[in-house]
Image (cartoon, rainbow, N blue to C red; front, side):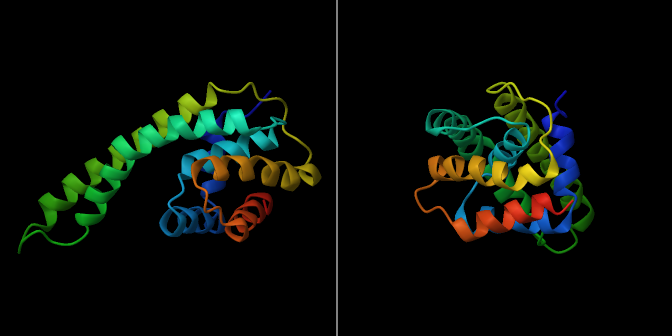
Length: 162
């Protein structure tokens, strides 16, 4: 039985190297982290992601990203700095609410992406690196024509380090 996507994503993202690789792809390449993690999760569970499935997943992620996740992220990041003198407590309370809402939006996107595939059993560790790479490429390409293969390899390696 497949491990639920959310649980898998939280576990792997908790590894510093995975978070670092994901944020690099997000901040430098404009990629959608939940979409990339979905591709990797599907790959390690034996799902082959072709161009049609990659495009479908990217379209769903694009709407959530453009309309909800990125605007929330911009507000959260803006609220790191003071809006005026003495606003720290109130500002940080609101920032934490925005952060929680951003995370819930990512979780909702991840639930929708999960519905696109029927995952199988977890592949043996020796097969996971290839499966992740093969799943990430079409998804990253569907998201952006400027696919950073080096950064995708770094993410794939971070995901398979266990």
